[in-house]
Amino acid sequence: MTTMDELEDARQDLEGLLVDVLYSVLGEEAYPGDDPLPSGPIAFSRLAAHDELEDSYLGIQVRVGAVLARLLASRMMSVGDPSPDDLIDTVGELGNIIGGNVKTLLFQTARLSLPVAELTGGSEAVEGALRVAASVFGQVAELTLQPDDEDSDRR
Amino acid sequence: MMKILIADDSRAMRMIVTRTLRQAGFGGLDLIEAENGRDALEKAKAESPDLILSDWNMPEMTGIDLLKNLRANGIGIPFCFVTSEGSQEMRDQASAAGAMGLIAKPFTAEAFSDALSSVV
Image (cartoon, rainbow over all chains, first blue to last red; front, side, top):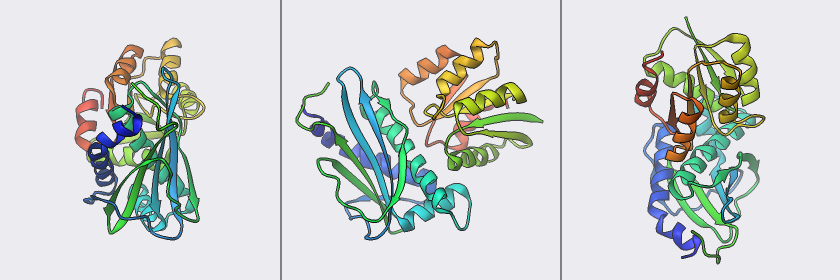
């Protein structure tokens, strides 16, 4: 079985994880779906899980549009007008929470890197990755998992 | 007044932990914040908090290294992880190093109450 196959098998669990985390941090019901990210500015958090036994990596990326990033920062930090640094901090922590739970769900022996979060201009598709998405407040949050070599056998 | 040190590199998460402590019914607390493990180590030595709530994955010094450093220095402050990684392996590692527990993110006020009511 390839890692991509394993990720595909876990798709429902990953959707559930994304929905649960969004509900937890926003206090608002989120729904799985496959809508694209909005056009315009995007906030993303990226981290890597490294399996030392197999010397393999999994890239874990969480992306949201600017509107949802502001909603997340506003709710999580209890501020009315979050700054760009607040958006980065919030989306970084969202990626950290989701990354930790992905590791617990799928790659318990892996080591997680620290998340790197940024604001960027657009939302190009992540190639060679499993994508799950959820909507909350009518806005899309996206989780992508990208193996370093999708054809290699794992575990 | 009970003094609690909250160590997390995310300001958003430190604010959520603070809010959740209140939601769990723990009032009248003196809260100190640290933004990484090294900062937390210095503040633990300087401020002698009654409890440390710490993330695991932090820059400068990880939470588990913070805990090991405290214990190696004979500092036995009750220590609970608040972290996104909640596998049994992590829980065992935390317990072996002397942590009283591990609260997995995302968490609820009930999880805080259950994990901390014996010390707060």
